Length: 363
Image (cartoon, rainbow, N blue to C red):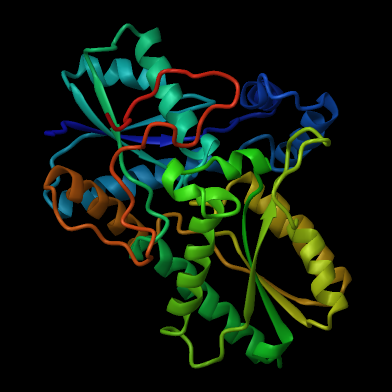
């Protein structure tokens, strides 16, 4: 396929206090989230001035991608579209079509398989094509999952090594520490149905959990390249639950895990948000505020590793993911689960409420 445009595809966020509740209502529409929960989450945004950092981070990523593409002679314009805030997908697709482009390659700021992290984006883009009457005029394909790409792993590994060194400087050994790899909790049912049917059947928690476990292992192993210190024990935990109270979601929660670690004699924790590409509200609030506060109350050393953001290795990885599609080149992947397929399988990460049109599905 000869692509002629790139679409940086992301979640979106409010950029002022008046936008917070309308944004949260759009995000949770049809999911039965109690109003009290929305109001609780709104205070997280309002504590940051009502502005989510995610849009500014995407502007920085957009600039970094353009600069990297220029050095590699990737002559493709890059547009940006959000699921839940301006610039909306439909508006971005109109601009792309008006500029004369026809074959678009979408990079999604979500590295893993799940309904909310993959298929919902593909549904939203298909709906945007329908709403703009561009179905059949624009083709949109999606870059594969990159949870085990070296450029995604390396920034986390470097951050982990730095945090371990800081803990040692504070007088702690590896035996004193616990590493918590965190990601967004999702309903158990969504996790169990994540990934292709033939792959998820042998993995509790589907490919969502399997991919995160693979990423955590890779980060732990790669961190050894950047420190002479021993790598502490690690665990995969979850954060940012937002569903109905009676629905089972992935556990344990990061805050509960920190308390359990303290009870077992751990003296310090290192938190690594591998489920996130950038430091947006959920990372800042749930980890830098709530998790850190609990650790301090328990007199634990606390360190939080940064997300990739615009780390050079991550920006290079995005360019490499584009190049492998436009040039049919070799794919980079560090785990036995990868490299992931270019197109999502039929039945992959199904929508539990309705079977909706999608882009980028295998035939």
